[in-house]
Image (cartoon, rainbow, N blue to C red; front, side, top):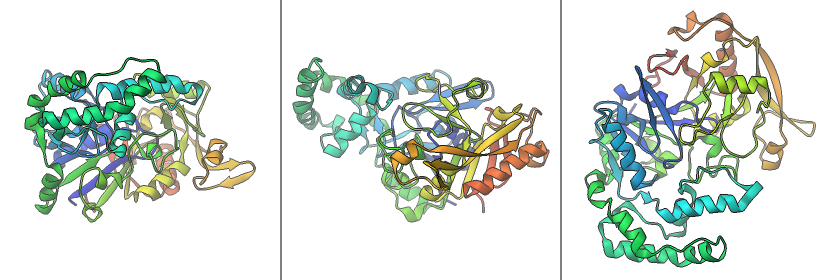
Length: 429
């Protein structure tokens, strides 16, 4: 089972970091294939809590080769801040590989991200302001800076000059901000070149050789299905492909190398940023989920919007990604609710939709159709066997499995590395 993709099934923050970390001892490479430092993965190891942003979660597993692949946009300053923070805590980061084809986030990307959001006002997307979108836009517009360019100063300065030709006009004349100089940006990037060089590799070749040798490669997605630029709730999405197909384009491996797709889904639903959210709770139940579930962004600290489990979204994620297994997280957060509603369909202007509406306007006006399941009051944080869960908790999981389109193979009952109930081997048959 060498090629395994692990992605989020909702709007992110499902617990992908913990799921990746749980598989760490059984994989050889962990590959980040999309996004940048706009996503945060939290991993709890014993008494230690790690917040990862740009680095793959596999960085915490001894012996694993962590890879930042070509589909990622890299802020060198953030990369080294994160490496320094981990190394200060005794984490070995020397195995890290960074693709020479990955694009680089610059100061002007971060500036454009922030001023554009402010300019949009009520039409803002809700970005993290870290320059991710503008860096991807430059990539598509073919004026981007790649990691390899930091090692050819002449080429680097030429590319920066080309990128700034238009951007400085935009900053000066539209946003009333100062222009950037080529030397300023080049000097910033070149200051990281010597330290970056030992990490840089042809990661697509490295991964292909690893798969040929029968090693297990785990492709770890940033963000999640409903934030995918093609398949998410556009325009309130990220700027990359966060679905399983993005693992191929974002890492340089072919689709026939993927054997299993694991989707992480929370036992309820959360979202950060703007955009439609059918099951969102703006009441005491929503606040309870936020408080008990510690629903605040790992990267931004922003409070997450909270709502009940949405089986329509889960079915959509199963279909779009070709999900073989779900990992259900944070089941323990639901302890104490007398009943737990689950969205099984949408009502859009009197018409029932059992699948995701094709129209974004319809999705925006979707009203959830709920089925109410019995809750439980027992503490489940110590449970490690499915049969030891309260009967109503077992029925809740089984109902979600039936509604969601793929088997639920593991269940999170707490933030700790060991707080997981395993029903099926995620890397087995």
